[in-house]
Length: 90
Image 1 (cartoon, rainbow, N blue to C red):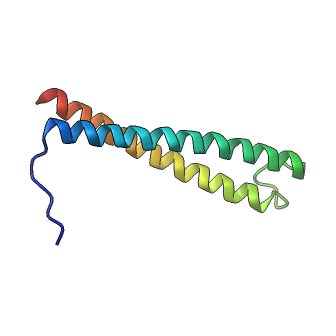
Image 2: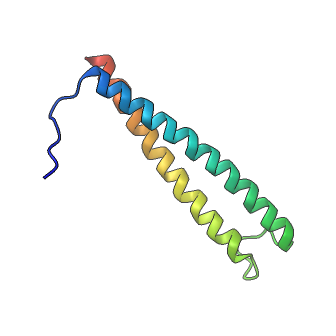
C-alpha cells in the first residue's frame, strides 16, 4: 500500500510546484502545436466550419485533444495556486 504523509515540508511543496510548472509549460507548448496542426489541416481540407459534416476527422480529433489539454491545464493551474496559497500561509 502506498502511504502518503499527512504533512509535507516546504521543500516538498516547492518541488511539487516546480514539477507542475514544468508540466504546464510542456502542455501549453503542446496546445500551441495542436492549434497550428488544426489550422494546417483546415487549410488543407478547405473546410473551417466544425459543424460541417465534411469537416476533417483529423481536425476533429485534434480539437478534442486540444480541449482536453486545456482542461488539464486549468486543473493544474488551480493546483499550483492552491500550493502557492498553502505555502504562503505556512
